[in-house]
Image (cartoon, rainbow, N blue to C red; front, side, top):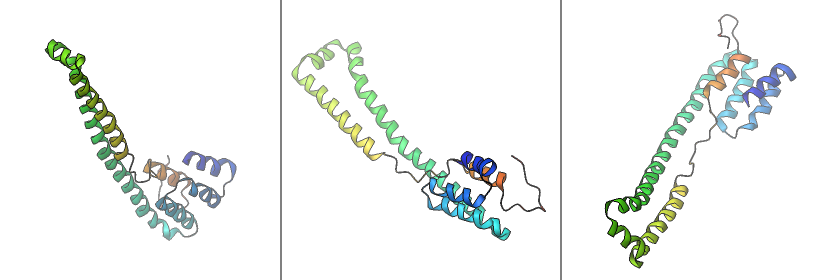
Length: 168
């Protein structure tokens, strides 16, 4: 999306206001829209460039929170997968450790009922784990805060001629 913005601003139409307006609805996030508005306003009033840093900080914070949430969601999934592997792995393990227990488990109605209950528990648990760990995401606007700074540094509508800027 940022590459499209840069292409539009450099090659198609150099009107940054129009490019920012077209980029604004592409990500459904209030902070991103606020950033686009601040960049637009900054083109006409250089004093507003100090408003960009807190906005990018908000986006960065959102990215950090999103990463922490992903980690919190991933841990229960990982634990569930390990437990399911352990439950399923006990059957072949039983074959090697005690042949009579394996025969009882596989060839008697009680053993088969036990296997059926285990299989049902795994399937039901899988459904609950998927439901409970479905991405409770903070919107992934700041896929990379660096992308926002890249657009800012390349286009730099708030460029201060008295300061050197780093070319990317």
